[in-house]
Length: 166
Length: 148
Image 1: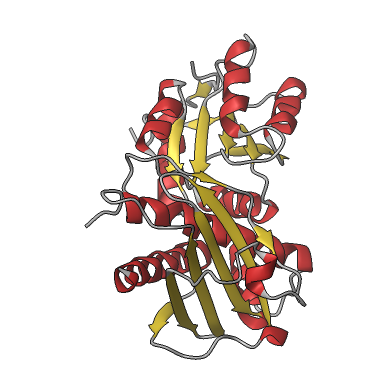
Image 2: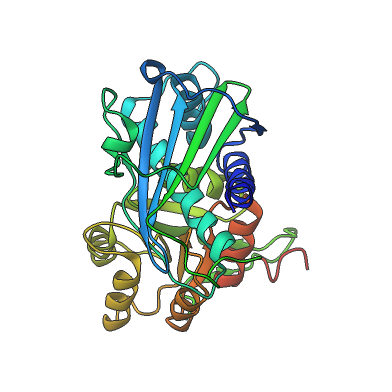
C-alpha cells in the first residue's frame, strides 16, 4: 500500500512542479531527511472519506527557484519571504488537490484546509499538528536541479476499504 | 450573456478588432494571481484592466465598483469562498451575466458539476496557457470571426 501511495504521490508532485513552476524533479530512492536549518516546510490538512495531512519540506534554494518561476521573474531576481511562503502554500495546495482524486477517485468529496508554512525552528510533525506516534503513510524524496524536496502523507487511521483506486 | 462588444473594421484589415476585456482575478494566493496574469499575457486575449481580489467578498466589492467582463475565481478561499461569491453574483442583476471561470484544484466530480450548473466553466490547476486561452475564447466567443 505504501509503495503504491508513494508512486502516486511522486507522480503528482513531479507533474505539479513541472506544470506549475517549470521545475523538473526525479524520484530519489531513500535518502536522508533534509537538514532543518536549510529548509522550509509546510503542511495542508484535508478531511473526507479519510482525513490527514500532506507535509512538504524544500531547501531554501529550491523554494527561491519555485517562487521565482511561478512569478515569472528573471534569473537573479530575488523573491520576498511572502512570495516564497505563498509559493510553497500554493504548491502544497495543488499537490494535495490533485493527489486525493488520484488515490480515491473523483466520486468522493474532500475538503482541503488552508495550507500553512511552519515556523523554521519547529519540528515538522509538531508544527503540522500531527500526533507524535503517527508514521507517514507515504514519503517521497525528489531530486531537482536546485536541490531536494521531501513530501510526507499522514493519514488519520486506516483508509476505508473500497475508497482507494486500484 | 456575453457583454463584450465586437467590432469588425472593414477595408484593408484582415483581422477583427475587439474592445479590450476587463478581467477580475479572485484568489487568496498572490503568487497564483500573478501566474494567471502572466498566463493571460501569453495568450492573444485582448486585455483591458486586470483587477485583483484576495477572496470572494473582495471580489464582489470590485464587481460593484468596476466594469468587469470576465471573473476568474478560485474556490478554496478564506472569508468568502468562490462558490458563495458565484451564488451572490447570481442574486445581483448587474452581476449575474458576467461570465465566470473557476480555476481550482477541486477534484470532486459532484462539486465541479454543481459549479457548472451555476454557469461557471472549470479550469483545473495546474493549467497551461493554451487551456486558459481556449477557455476564455470559448466563454467570451472570441476568435470565432478571426481571419475570415
